[in-house]
Length: 223
Ligand SMILES: *Cc1c(COP(=O)(O)O)cnc(C)c1O
Image (cartoon, rainbow, N blue to C red):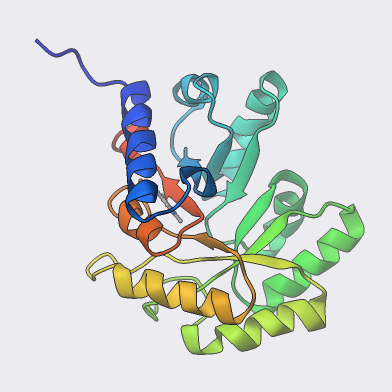
C-alpha cells in the first residue's frame, strides 16, 4: 500500500516538473525560480519545505506574512519573500520593510506610496508590475494596453526600478495567450523577469518564458 503523500514528495515532484519543462523548452532549469506559495499554511507546514532547501516563498497578504515569517526568518538564513497579493497604501510601509520582492505594483497611487516608503526606509525591494492580461474587472493589475505607459511612469515619475512583470490568467481561459502577452510586454519594456504560472499551468508558463513560477497547492496540498 502506498503511504500518504507528503509535502516533501510533492515538492520533489514539482521540482522534477520544472526541470523537465525547462529542458523540453531548451532552457536551463536554473533560469526558473520556484516561488513556494505558502499562504494559509502555518509555520509547521512551511518548515519542512525550508529544510528541504527552498528559500523563495510567496504570500498574498501583508498581515499574514508579518504574523508567521519573522520567526521563520530568524531560524533560517537567506529566505526571500515575495508579496503576490494586492497591496493597499496603508500597508505599503510594512510591505517595503518586510518583503524582498513586491510583485503587485499596479496603479499610480501605490507606485507613488512605494516610492516614498523606499525613500523613508532606505529599503529597496525588487518591484514587478502586475498586468491584468484578461482585463477582468474584479482582478488587480494594470490593463495590458496601459502597461507600457504605467511602467514608464513608474520609472520616470517615481524613480522605481521595475524589474519584472506578473500575471494571473483568467481561470476559465487558456493560459498560453496570457503568458505570451506578458512576455511581449516585458520584451518591449526591457524587462527580464516574468512571474507567471501556478500549480495547474507552470509547465506552459516555463515554455513561454517564465523566470518565476508561483506554486502553492502542488507543493503544500489543497487549501
Ligand atoms: C495562491 C496564488 C498562487 C498559487 O496558486 P496554486 O494554484 O495554489 O499554485 C500563485 N499566485 C498567486 C498570486 C496566488 O494568489
